[in-house]
Image (cartoon, rainbow, N blue to C red):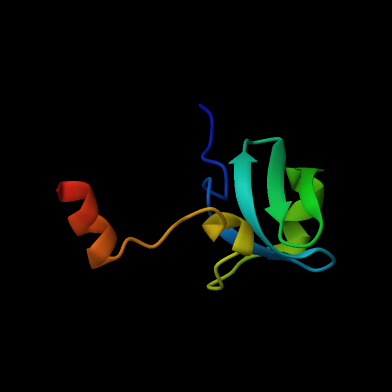
Amino acid sequence: MASKPPFAQGTSIEHLKFGLGSVQSCTEEHIVVKFDEHGEKKFVLSIALPSLKKSDKQAASATKGRRKTTKATTAAVAN
């Protein structure tokens, strides 16, 4: 039976060398992380796992492109 990968998609993580990033995908063998300042990197999970830790900080790549909805915007759409 397959085990659950250690990181879910969208999880904010911190890498010792590359800094803060967001998990794009994670399998039992590989993890793909989009870092704020170093772009997307693919790692062999068993090798990279000691260098990765979950972070409470929100990675910029995880929030990039989202717009805040204001009351004025919501009212304009409703009319």
